[in-house]
Length: 452
Image (cartoon, rainbow, N blue to C red; front, side, top):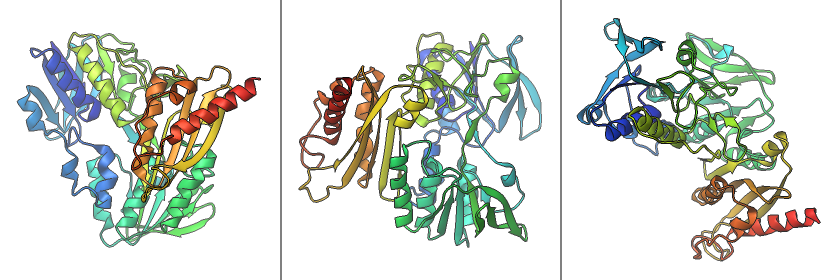
């Protein structure tokens, strides 16, 4: 059996390792168009901010290590075409320029996503960047030398993490967001303003409801950003307005693309074309709360999808359970987490949802390091089914409480299930009634009151 994998980062290398473990006699070949495999892309902002010593520290496995496990890894080899009938892929070796046809019995497309570049960002000016991979990070690091003013376009995860990173490097930082508030895709409006406040409290200038119209430059380097609200000076600009799944290869192979814009698969990560699997950030999944197809590109999801695909390509039987949209990030001292649906998302989907907001402390209130924590818990009116939660706290580790709700969402748990959960207690970690239990109690009473 010859298993060919296109893409050598999270999903691709997880699939390769799992396939080889499941079937040691299989020939597993990974084609990666870049220069690195198996690295933690989520750590890139923390290298730039100085919390991680260098980009090499993000690399989990080298090509040599994978070859030692019997997996053939070919760097700077780009797959440019798939012939599903002949079961071959066309591969360009960028070192030699040669193009060859490579056979496969099972094929995995783990082609990931690309950063969206609006028309105004398609420029030859130096100092304009996106951040998706290690070379992007290295390019930003080079631009930091001598820079004093940075503009980040986009107030999502990457933009907010980079706002902290570049501020820690001594730059004056501004965030430009076209939506009314930052973190708009992650949180309800009542919680978005807490994130904006944290940025501004740490010296970051925030321009919301602002659209970028173009860039200016001098001597080949960017000098600023023109917006509909005026001109902003900058020595460097980072574009963080979102990502787009890389599906051109899949589409050309006749694979069905879902309504989300990502590759459509079944629970075994199989596409609509026999012998072709898809996994990772280019692939859609089932949301366990809504039962709808979603595209939520996150690290754990990609790794888990890859494991499932690897087992199945090697002759086994594994399934991907779906996602509940759990995510977490920090910016400066603020931790932010969410899972499931926000109140706003639930309303958009037509669900009869109700939420409660609780302000408490993340430790026992009398404990010296206790900080305020804010929780919104959302459920379905009538059934009491949990729909999601949002947490914000200045002890950023404390928002990992989100995982308790995420676990219950996977089992379609109810508010009462959360209230009855036997959570651990000691003063350095929580009050005797943890904030999640308080929220569950209040939400249960709210649901009961509205049902009378």
